[in-house]
Length: 246
Length: 285
Image (tube, rainbow over all chains, first blue to last red; front, side):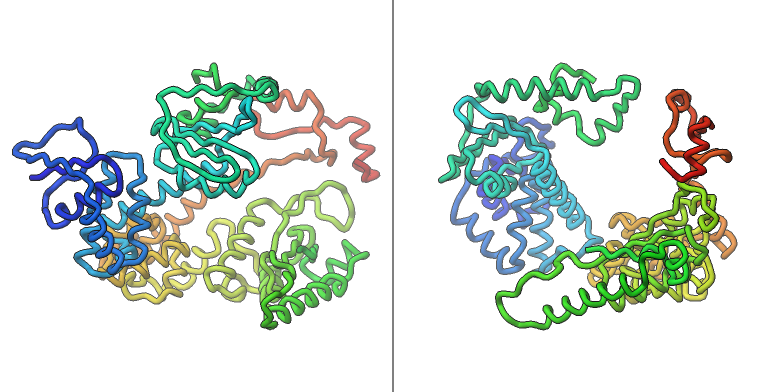
């Protein structure tokens, strides 16, 4: 049994697929801290542009839409995403035809679920994402999505805030999209980023917290319903929820 | 764009909304539909947008004595003639006492059944004649699709792997998405009961009407099916709250009634004050 250790990037994944596709019983994973099965050989995979290009070329010849679907699966924020993508690729190579309609096949079902989760979260965040005005007039939006959706929501905000410089910061993955009304750049950030808010923003946040507190009806706490509408893991970026433990 | 038909027949319209006439509503709808069709046929590149969101209409259900069958036939005719996007139904809720108006509300369940029937006509290929007879109301205990299937049990069970799309759409519990999933998936492999469950086709009702590879997993006979489906419907039944006691018909509750409403009370009961009774008689809010 071979265990291919990738570094989490798509290029490295396709390099691993080059060998892993025909390797039955193998595991492809970016994680470094898991129980190694007995008798397993660890293989560290280094991204190789030639191998990765060959794999992608072959997949594109089989199914034009497959690369996009696999890149969406690889954005999934769970440990099994490489295996889901690998099973999907194996099925594609076996059938030599598009497989997205084989809805009774478990690999296709898993792939569809992963894609739905990623695109669903991206769709939600185009509505959820909140911006704060910084002292220098740049809008700052921190968020921590379950899946890697920064690049997926970026086009929406580039159109929406075309004349406004902004920064969208994926806190957990430590990357941010920076826009200055001319160019957009995706950069890595430090572990902790603090932003000085403008006076207007500070005043507005206080106003918002006061409004939230005054509109609340203490005798009708619908905790479960509230958490169903806005999951607790998103509360840390909402000013009106700071100081709430429930 | 909505031209409200208001009431399901010309007779009721004359009675309850005499300032509107049938022509004043239907003529503009016909013209708009014709205009849209003419624009669709035009082949130029820079076409102006004409009514891009389509036409809709609305009617009040329960204020007049028409049966659901008649309402559905009217909706069907409007969909066909005017290419409407949607027909909206509004359950009548009595606000004012009048000799021409009924005392009781039509009930939200009736509105819900009409919307279910409307969906069947638009997305499932049903015709109004199949759903309900001319003078009939839609059944309360079953939704229209279940009711149709129970009336036509000779067509069931259908074999999932062979049935045409039209028959798959008629199975209670299989919606448009489920039917398309089945059609796509069965090209590659024969589908079994477990496969359907994995594909997230809801089998609670569908299992009485389908076979998977010849195997049947539903109830033994027709009466058992009827009981099971009716029981299920009872679980989803709406509880019709009554906003009005017998004496008066004003909609604003007094503060003490609202306080009593906090807690476990599900029914409002309005205090009958002299002012309320006076307003009810004169029809002023």
